[in-house]
Image 1 (tube, rainbow, N blue to C red):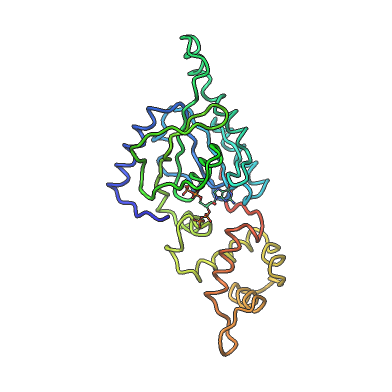
Image 2: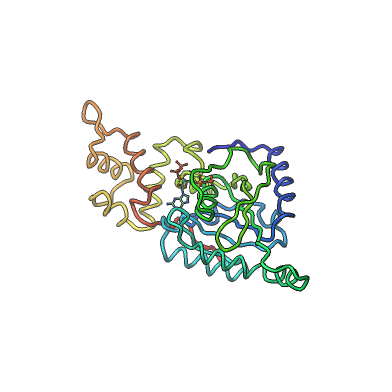
Length: 282
Ligand code: G4P
C-alpha cells in the first residue's frame, strides 16, 4: 500500500491518532525488526507522549536473532518495553500480552481500587505502512483476512476487537508516515518493500542491495547464488547471478530487470537469509 503524504495529511493523522489515544491504555508501536530505526515514524515519541507503549519488532523471522537481541537491549536501555514478534506464525504474542499487563499495571491497580475487576486492556496499533499491522490484528484476534484501509490515520468506526489475554484492540490501526529525508532510510524502506520500488528504479535498488549484503557478509550472496564475490565489481556479481539464474535475453546478454526482481523478491521473502539491515547507533 502506498500513500502520498502531504503536510495536511500528517496534521490530520496526528490529530485523529491523538484523539484515539485517549481511548486506549497502551500503544502497540509496530516496527520492522530488519530496520527498526528506518521503520519508525519520526514523530512517534511526541505522538505517543506518556501513554504506556510496547514496541513490537515484527517480522522477526526475517531478521537475525543477534539483531533482534541487540535492538531489544537498546530499547530496554531507553526504558521502553519491546517484544520480538512474528505475526504470521503467531510468535511472541504471549510475551506481548504479558508486557501489556506490565506497562499498564498502575492504571489497572487504580481501577481495581475502585472495584473494577478484569477490565480489558484497551490497545491501539500504530505504525508505518507494511510493518504488519493488519497481520497482527488478525493473529491476536484469530480472525482472517481483514486488511487495513489504505487511508492515512484511523477510521472513525472505533470498534473494539476482543483478543486473547483479555485485550481489546481498536479495529483500525493508526497508519503513520515514514521518515522521508534520510537517503539511507529511504533505501532500507525500499529494500524491505515498505515503499514499493518508487524511490529508485529497480535495477539501481538491486545494485545497492548487493552492495549492502556484501558489506554485511559476502557469504549471503555466495551461498544463495553459488558464486564467488571476491574482488568482483557489483556489476559482475549481478551478471553472474543472472547467468546462474538463466536471466538471459537475445544475444546472450543478462536481463538486469529480471535479476533485480529475483534479488529483491528473495531478500524480502527471507530466502537469502535472516538479515538485520541496521543496528543501534548508541
Ligand atoms: P500493514 O497492515 O502494516 O500495512 O501490513 P500487513 O499486515 O498488510 O503486512 C504487510 C506484509 O508483511 C504482508 O505481506 C504480510 O504477510 C507480511 N508480514 C506481516 N507480518 C509478518 C511477519 O511477522 N513475518 C513475515 N515474514 N511477514 C509478515 P504480503 O501479503 O506479501 O504483502 P505485500 O508485502 O505484498 O504488501
